[in-house]
Image (cartoon, rainbow, N blue to C red):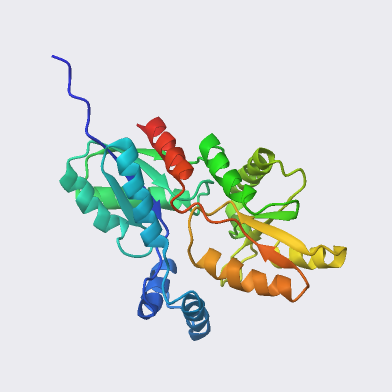
Length: 295
């Protein structure tokens, strides 16, 4: 008798974000490992969420991506958040109840860093053991050069690029994160180069955005320093393309759409960005290919 194949599933993981202003303080305590945020930081973060409507669409987009993947893959797709509900630990109860025996796991961060994807891997392992999950977990540690991901980004870029200066970005990390050969910087720049090549962009720049509220030295150059240079060079139109992010959330809707756009305008620069991948069918196909390789 042919052995029955293992029941398979997929776990999507994201950072998590508050869906109400009242949740910002609790959310920040999870982000900071239980350490309370200062009144200044709390007010700044709360004001940013207020400026984008009082909540983040991160969970809604992650669930939409999960639903699309269920249709493509024909298997259960679970969502877990590292710093807000549904927490990874909460999701593991659903994984255990489903009877899944092999689980592909994809963090919705295409480029690997020990401080990001590595942390998802550790937190998921801890939650699985605590929940009594016996499923084998197969990780997609990085998919920064997945061809369909590159195509998805390039397709979005093509909708707004008409020869303007292009500035690719990714989320900054403390410089110390790269001390032991962490591949994050290399992978972010590789994604940018691949998207530029696919879209036919011969010249571009790369910067880091959304540096944290700590005294660490953070990866640069900053977006602001690039905009200052563009202004001195007489550049008047810029496309800012965040290839380190796969859906709308505060780092897109506030940092880019409000903060950087205002900073650029004050220097005589018109700044636009491509639509986020969000529910892109090509992005869904990319995630499906990554999941299949895991399984």
